[in-house]
Length: 147
Image (tube, rainbow, N blue to C red; front, side):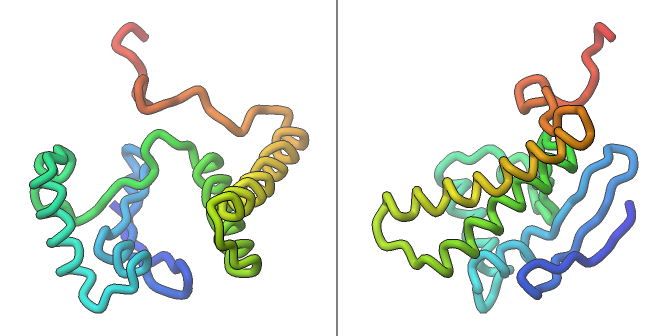
């Protein structure tokens, strides 16, 4: 596994690339630190895991001591980048527009999504192929045993 440091919002996120599965793994504690601005992200993650266990969340129970989390799920790199573009665009538009109501927030989200949609459509136009894969969480990314 190849380890590296990624930068998000000017903060470091420890990451590892698994060549065999072609998946990125990110440090949950680093992600928690960025998303929550917590003074002690390790304690925040421990408490969150505890609360999730109490609620019956099997992901935390099964992963005992989870240090890394696969944020890619079944998304291709292109899908992941387009998703990140939508999220970043929405965040920046929101910071500029300062929405107050639910409808205003919804409008900002639609604007961010529109930016990613336009990028997807232009990419598809230039490459002549779909940027969206047929893979999904239900069928997974591994070939079926019938293949």
